[in-house]
Length: 307
Image (tube, rainbow, N blue to C red; front, top):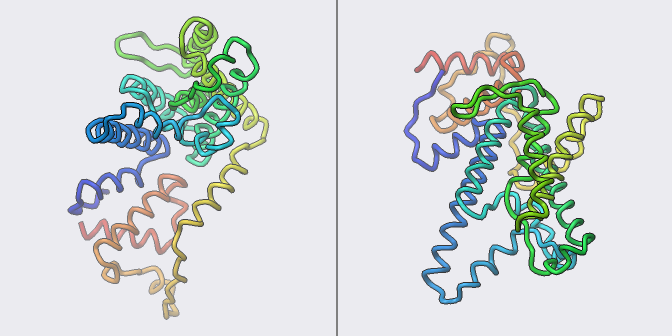
């Protein structure tokens, strides 16, 4: 069923964001941040003569390897995983997030996938900071090295998917089908090999941290321990701080079940009706049609008959 409305491009983006699963939402956020970051670079480059100003601004959103600097900007542990160095960086990250995230979403709910990305990204940042402060090889760069990119969170999704369904096969372009566990192992080996060979050792450490979390998360989930529970409680509390208080339920003065379930749609304006339809469709996507109440099913049926 589709509900046709005249939406502005911004409203359409909001609708696609609300109606999409968590993988779609993460991709949209990453692309949105990349676009904003690009326009920030254009603005600073055009209006200011100091070429270092842009770097000074965005560095506040990247994870510094210096523990002292990290203490001064702890928010960067979250923000860094939505920034990218260039379009190739974000392109490959989003391709892998889409391919593996789509598979993972077939088996896990949104509330179990978001922690894989976020906590995997945090684990990657932790290993990156730890490595740069423990190994003498990187000590010379501690005060200036920074970490950015979704790679740790993406690697967490990749390894969670490969651990959950190791024999699942995917096809890239014109290549023959290949099991996702082989892809995950290949990238893990590549990260180990490349740590001493290129200038992105911090990124490779972050990948390993993300992969480790994704693997352990699924193993614990298979053993009956859900690491997403505590994470979701924190997220729910944070989200509740920004939500406006909900009005109490509307009283319906009727003594019959038929009257209670009728819920005529003419009581709603077009925008309010669409918002309610979106909410019901989201509920179906997350929990299935059977999770709807009689009133919600009746409302959805009436709207479909109007179109």
